[in-house]
Length: 420
Ligand SMILES: Cc1cc2nc3c(=O)[nH]c(=O)nc-3n(C[C@H](O)[C@H](O)[C@H](O)COP(=O)(O)O)c2cc1C
Ligand code: SF4
Image (tube, helix red, strand yellow):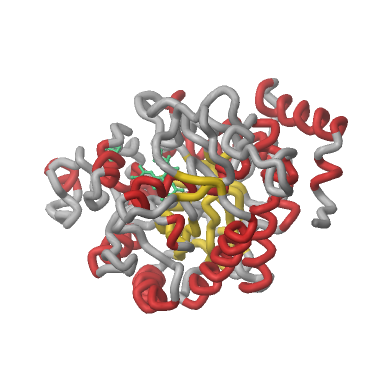
């Protein structure tokens, strides 16, 4: 396969120079230009204009019906988010192929019968002034639990016998299966555009298929899809090309990228930074910077706990800052952001173009409007992850800590998502 970008980037000297440059920004306190842009400034990405810089980061909600279709309750959940002031809402991981499904209540975009429900969802969000993107995903071996319950086998880049972080049955994918999954991502993107989504985001982070291909720990293939970085990125490149050829140049195609694994022996930051640069060169329109494979729960995961002081917030800030300095496309920071003061500082320092929030908006869907009218309280989310445990036990997404006091703060306007 022809690739003009990777051979050059992987040239060792260039590589060392770039990493040192990143290091000077990350660790030597490089003075960067500040701007007068605030998080409430609009931003235009291809043909998508956002009313502000706040993004609801992709959050699986378990609200789909058993066929993977949108439900009325789900439309209400998204409407509350849109009413709450966020600029862009990214759906939870939406399954592009039956072999990548993680739960019975996950949204699917794997067939045309999903389109009408998804269209109702995008219409509702648009009517409330927000934009919406579909997160396109395949779970890889993380689908083992759900597929196992149906007597089906999950698939992954390789079978890894020494993976102490994963229990479950799965097997190595064939090359034909890889081609089928590439095409499924492209077809998912066409359906997303048809259903009115303003953009798509590839799930290239956390524990799922694209991270499994990128990490040398889970990708032990010795064919064209494994080995050196350019081979471990081949599936991303094929998917990007397939999507772009199907949706056209003007449609925003974004990626959530895990740039480092959560344990020793996995993907290293140096390679993650190279991957981010390559994606920007290929034409991805936004890079959301997160973690790759998970290690210890929760400190080696993307959803960390004990974010009880401002210095613990924004735990991927240094990764994002280093990448922002080296790419020309917008970059989004996610992970543990709770204080407006810090968010404002990050935007003004040009460390990120967009700010992604997940758990704070589960507890307070209207947090952005509060901040906009000058109520700059710290997000009430205490990062306990009980909402995560709830969806993992097949409940619908809700904040377990939400109290009557939260609702009283809103002058008696009671949320239907109050479950205590
Ligand atoms: C309940 C729950 C579900 C999540 N589902 C997804 C998902 O479907 N796709 C994804 O990319 N990230 C998912 N995440 C990760 C979040 O998008 C985000 O990266 C992480 O929670 C850190 O951001 P926060 O501190 O603002 O929550 C999920 C997080 C939570 C808590
Ligand atoms: S249950 Fe509520 S407080 Fe706890 S992490 Fe989830 S949103 Fe935050």
